[in-house]
Length: 143
Image 1: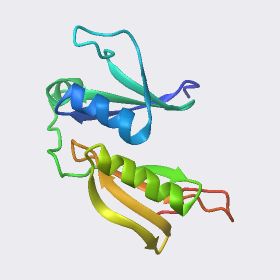
Image 2: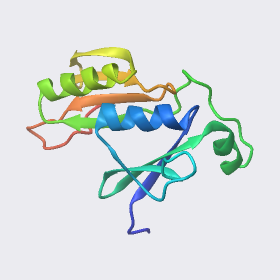
Image 3: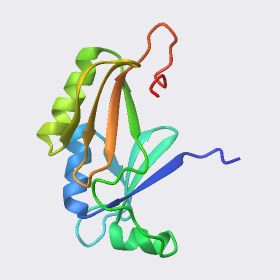
């Protein structure tokens, strides 16, 4: 098993739009050598010590996955999750994402699994922000 970070790759429509969104909405810091457009190539962000987010233009993403069909905007193949310490932090992340161009999918509020809200990034990838379960110390209690 790998001991290095896991990389989650997502197809995107526009490098500049995605770069600005992930910096503004989630406060992620990009890393890597800049390409001709001034953005790192590949476009990657360190989410934490164990996870990297790599954003790949859709046409290149299709090539990387062996010519398999890439899901179109609004088609969700996975739900990306973030945890926050408080309900106010959930609200703040959702508000920051909205201000950076996200679409609200589910307004923040009490759900059967806890306090959560969901937004879609500019490419339609769904992100659910959930208040960490303080009693269990686990933020993975969503269905």
